[in-house]
Image (tube, rainbow, N blue to C red; front, side, top):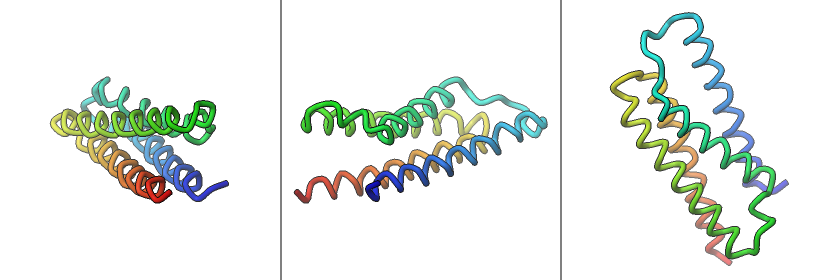
Length: 120
């Protein structure tokens, strides 16, 4: 398994752990406000992108199309998470921090992968 997939697995496991902590805190009633639907949709799109990358769905396309789809979906989902973070920051700080962390981690690793791919 290449290094990039280890990075995605580690980031995904951290995201799942934080998600479980947030859901448990919500169930125990520590929050008064529920997260917006926009936040859930943003998180699901980012997780879907990670699942597609880990299962090598982008490999099914030709090289140029697969790279374009990977970059476009990665960048749009990360920016969507940042927009949801900004919107959620007024409602629920814990979810906003979680979304910000996940999207920044995804952006950083995505830029690293984008730079490594450009070295060819």
